[in-house]
Length: 213
Image (cartoon, rainbow, N blue to C red; front, side, top):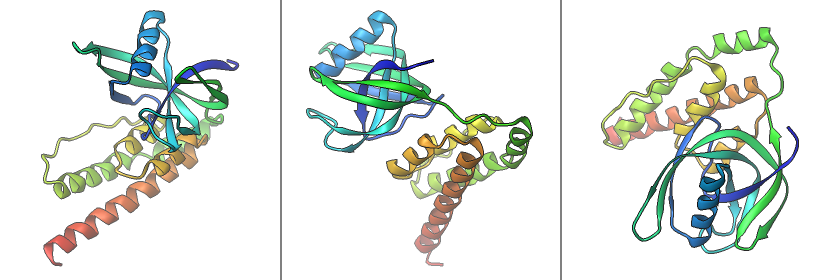
């Protein structure tokens, strides 16, 4: 697949492939964009803001984002919309400009590097403990927030794990973006493991301090 044009929705968040992201659409320019996407059954792009503002202005964005497909839409009486999007493939921005009030870009797909079968088999084996490690993190996070623990079932597929775990991690968006731009499955899994270990340790230290230990 070559280059293609995509209308962009700059946000202070990161959407991963296969991930779900609910959005509240209230600005007229984005309402118009979503109406067009629905009418023509086309996706739009979600890209992280690195400078500027999300609402009412023109933002500077990261170079890599994710194609977002609308899964559901609820229209409110005042014209606002509640939508849920699903992340598809990643893209790299080649050029962008504001077409009226919306940012439109010429983009190209950003795919993972090919993973040899032996490497993939090794990655699958090495990532087998990630769901358990994530569950430990999730339990600690729930406890720190005084929330009710609700188990999150994760798949065994290493590629899906490399996206689902960082989607749940409470880390700065620049770290989430670092995961998004990584095109090596094995390196991305290693980065996810490092982030998971660091955040788990932080939560453990926080809970020990709260207990006076």
